[in-house]
Length: 386
Image (cartoon, rainbow, N blue to C red; front, side, top):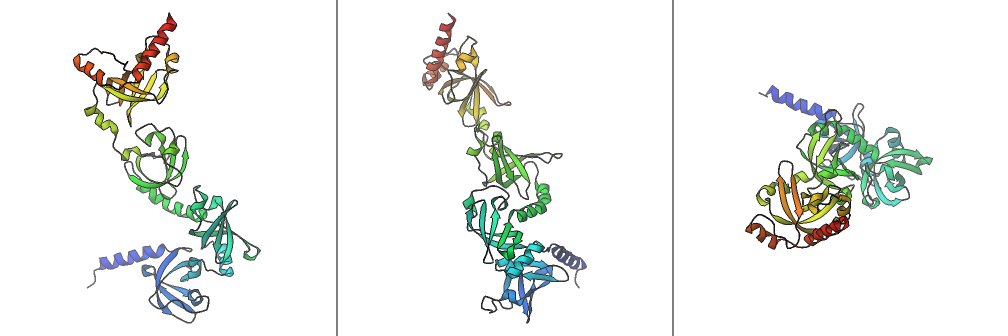
């Protein structure tokens, strides 16, 4: 005896699949019978469809398929029964079929031959069509990225008996995006790791398409543990990247993304490898009125306060002498792990610091170069006060 629960589940699954068939959709099926005018195609749980025999013949009029062959075709009608077109799917449509596709909005297959002024030349059913550059994709990419590619297009203009055809790929992509957007948003939660495509890059970061046209912002501060001066040095439009969802604003639907969170935080080793009194080599990354920021290692930045360069208080004078890129020896004065802050001071060359013999030994082993600059700055500022 058949389990009624299983029967219901089978019928329910079949009905769901059947509902998903839409005009313009490309589906696969198996030819189960060939008649004088039409062939019957089994499309699985979606039922049975028909396709005209002419659609299955080559240019010489010979039948290209047999019972049992699988074919790919476009749904051209869902009224009464499913009707398919193989030529639309293969870019071999006739003039009449192209005109019908224009009026009905059905997609057609075309090959991007080459980039031309303002767009692309596209070959569709041995016809030349034009696709404006703004209609080839949802994002701006390099022109050569599309040459030679075969895409689905929508005919948006059909004039002069087919001698003037304008197509759009973007229209189809945006429809797909809208259909997928709701499902994509439901799958995006804070902490999720997703793969997306960079759509644009700005000074403050990059926008990433996570699917279905749903975009998130990868802020420049979340691109790397080290300071990133230029977003375009990390990502470019069209790049496929893996990101982590940092937050999702339920009210505005804004999505914040991170890239550095997928790598080890260099601050995780600071607790065990850094201690007050150490002398480390550092590189000045930027200068402010209150001090200089110093990179001790990629992702670990410290602050050398203005007061550590001299006692004159003339900050504008010392900051004019300290430039990003300078390297030298710095002593660690303080470590705040919770706030990720380290205070340092430039080490004058040959100095003997208070703290005993161990500190003096560390001074002897410390890198040279920046200490002499600190001495010169102090000397210059002191001489101006006299």
